[in-house]
Image (cartoon, rainbow, N blue to C red):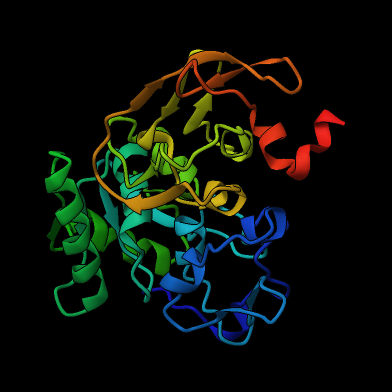
Length: 291
């Protein structure tokens, strides 16, 4: 069984330049810190994420739970598989359910071959995975004893011979990869308070996944594409938008009307045709745009 050794840790690891806390001011995303089993990921005084290389065990939990897959210096684990099953050697630290979901979709994995007393963490990981798969009405995984072919493969590895029929590989990281593969299910849902929203469009422009789309005809909220990064919350001037955990995958479409601004005389999308000021003019106090 392979293990994570102290000298195998990456020399330079960080949250990465693509981290939403580095790209969007006031971002509140702490997805990586929430799942780190060793507390290696923390929030510093400047509001950015920092990874302590001495505490990092390279488990990859942050990779698979990050909205953008941004952590640098950490690679997803290389795992061995044959047909529809993961086989030994297994990592000492079990993968997170989010990683196993990608194995489920990408390689059609349905079984894990392992000794019953060798890796208790894998039992918990598969159990957590099956909770999600049952909700998604997907085939469940099972843990089975090592097959003679796997045991023979272990002897071949010991003799440094090629292990016939076994492949090694890894899967794409980040919530984006998971959303792209499970397009009928959601994990997060953008929720809007229409009575507060001024339809300025900041949320749709900052959403990299196009989970929020605003055009002249409608505002569309698509939870299936949402990765829960919270960028839309961070840029919403009116605090009208929130991101909530949800498995409901139905899109919401809010039809819009055309209105004309009495100040700048431009047409703009509005909740009702009776609105008299566009979002820009509403933000200019004391009639500055009328001067």
